[in-house]
Image (cartoon, rainbow, N blue to C red; front, side, top):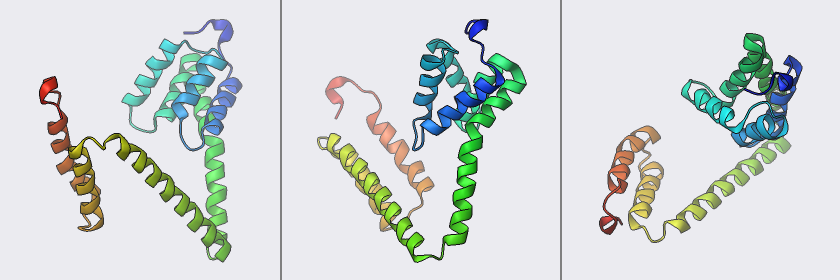
Length: 186
């Protein structure tokens, strides 16, 4: 663990985890958490952080909330875990509640409906863009393209639910791509 001199106070744990939460809108919590806890504040070494992240991933629940609890408890015990957890949850939860109340009050407004339609369209465009970028990497792999096509057709045309589709196609894909001798690999 870090030097006792670098041992953060409850307020430092709270504000550090709040910085993680506010820096990572849209994802990337693990990267921001590592940057803030290890690189900027020096609370843990990289090895200690990776150990904590591994422990956090073993427990049920969101990894970064578990990680905040781990970090807080390492320095201040139970009260540090509470301070760090409050830091990572308080502002995002408050923003979500405010946005939820605003939507409840304004959901019948044509402007809000159009705004949300634009957000949904942008999200669909980003998902399609990622799909096309990934598909380019698999152009030379007809099995991967075939599995993707089967998944797409099963969900859109046949209306197969995700879980049964994954339960059928995932084992097939794993069996096909299981490590084999280099000359027999597709």
